[in-house]
Image (cartoon, rainbow, N blue to C red):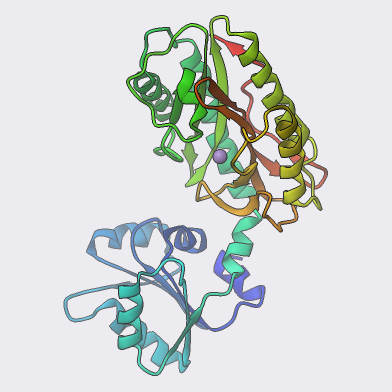
Length: 351
Ligand SMILES: [Mn+2]
């Protein structure tokens, strides 16, 4: 059964308009720009000239409607909604702009616009076999690229240069662009969890954090490793050891039925005792077509882990003026625990 069929089988009723490109890709396979209207009878992709052939190739099961000078997206929607005889349309209120909403409201007089049920989000949270295969491929590319980078890292190289090398190594191994902007944070820059690679030179005695990910089949990998350039101080060693322990503590508890909030607490309580206030972000997040998606893995999360969830575990310690460390893998929740598709060592790597 295709995914729209599964959505229906799961009790999803009525007409729905999707504008989130990842939801459209997930439901139909079409990765271009456009909208997807799902009615009781039809799945209609509305796009423009640029994507017509792509749409035919990627989503042959959908009805293709091309907008034109005389037939706007709203005109097309109205035709199908009139045909269905419905008076309500679910829309993605988290994606549409106010202008887009106003134009729908104006063009679809008599139709009540309602908030999209969370059915697709719920479905996307539990990854199927084909999605897991893409995630594993993205993980493999990321790991192999990182191993290739490690052989090339030298003191005196800029963060930007190291970033370019890593991205190149991912690209030549088949990555579809990047899962997100690569982070390279060396020395004192390591205290910025989301540092932007700079002209700063890598130096002996520093920790260097790389947070990056390849993409395969639309799915993102997310991995962070912090490596040492040459010999580092005891203080930095201790930070590394603490983050490593926090990572393993939380990781080893990943299994179905666990509250994501409790995972976060395991790592947070451990680090808070050693480095008060130095771990200020969430332990992790869901990963899929988006780099950040549900389930959340934070102190606020009410998510309970299920087989097929894909989450990151990424504790860190950040100390202004000294530096920082983060260790992260994206892992798959299985029936019995978890699977970690990343192969790069989590023991301190010295380059
Ligand atoms: Mn992450």
